Image (cartoon, rainbow, N blue to C red; front, side):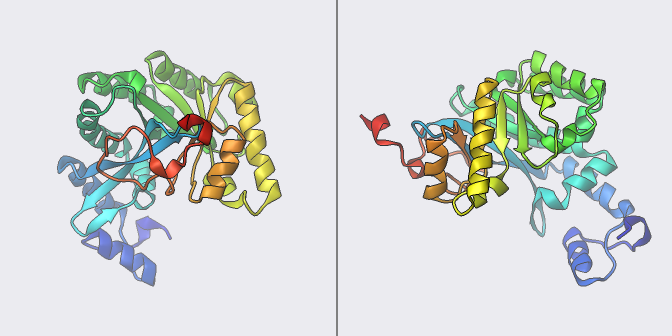
Length: 284
């Protein structure tokens, strides 16, 4: 559907319902001011999902997942991030949410890290890199506590400028993680060129690996490849104990998913996750 050709609907949730029923939905003229007003009202915030060590069930930190606290209910990123990228509000949304995160960082263990997602459009622009670094320092956030997650798909047709911008983030003290690995058709050559410290296996492989020997082989191969390059591995979408135990046997470093904890606006403060079921040797 071409958003330039459809009528204005006054409310975001009404617009979503209209799209779902085949009626007219929102135009750019409605979406852009809605997002900008939401930024002014500080309606964007992060929910935090734990990332847990498979060896001893200790917390590495959290992935920060942006949410929109709209008057009609919580809006998930799949419903607005793509629009924010195309309307130029993605950096403003990130700044709004990051301001709230700075308060969470103050009350958490300084050893915990927080991963935030970056869009391809941000990585292409030098001014976005400079703005982000300045914002982090102005909020009093130590860069080493933040991990920048970039999707594998965003590296297709990787330009020298984008590679340089990723390097600038690394030089500024941020860790770099490659997200959704295995789904973006990214050449393996990028792994030797990028300053990646962490690789995240896409949940589609994790979901299928108990029943599918092929998916299991792919996951094991990714873990071995990453470790051979000195890169740690996070498996996303872990929802069952059998998945966890398989990943532990493969020596996958970290896990994330509903089994370990759902995204929440509140950080519990615990240092270990009981649902992780630590191996017997770590209890001795």
